[in-house]
Image 1 (tube, helix red, strand yellow):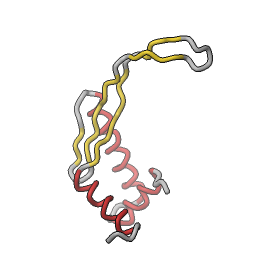
Image 2 (tube, helix red, strand yellow):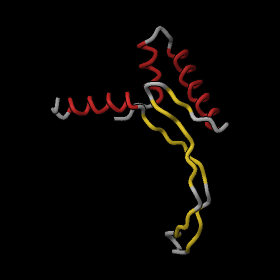
Image 3 (tube, helix red, strand yellow):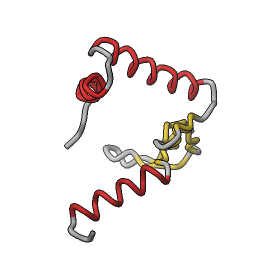
Length: 102
């Protein structure tokens, strides 16, 4: 199951004293701050969550699947996320419990 943005905002407002609208503003601003930092070339490291960073893809040869003609895929950047060790250990613990290994 996937949690969407609205579900995240609802859960945040239930767990804090913020209203739904205040939680919505907080989540949107957090996303904006992360995006602005990445746009300026800075990585974003959120303690106990992980690190957002830009990954540089080098140009590479590819083949057009429709025409089968070779071409070069231009270089580009994409956002990557690396989970923190704390988050990874929580996920591993949850999956062990669900699989009956603990």
